[in-house]
Image (cartoon, rainbow, N blue to C red):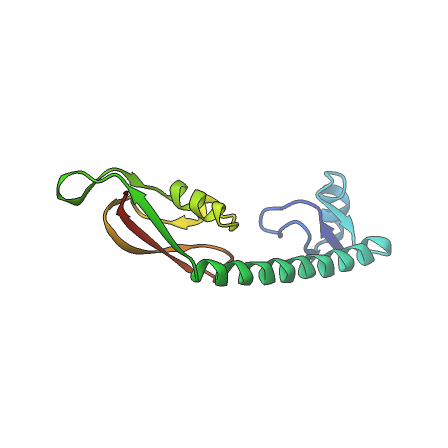
Length: 148
């Protein structure tokens, strides 16, 4: 029997997938537990429409991500910080600081997507990768210089 899964089912598949399962398994377990619906008539057409709309949404997100990636790659952030003796910074530049600086330039980025192993603690120029979409990680240039 063909069913469309409404939730993830271990060893069967993920939500939204169409699977062929034994009739008894479908009628006695999957359907009563509301884990699946029969893939017949309206449910099948709705499933096909859902797949098409999901694909369209993914393509739109990819296009938006490509635009954001080019903006990020062409951006140079200059961070002015207080500096002590020997070029040591008071404090450090964190992923949150970089996300805030990008936000001020109109590029919204989640700080968790910024690949910064440890905060920047010295003067210099750094390339910091940012995950925008799967397979897209543009690098923003961060220049850390003394304030004033």
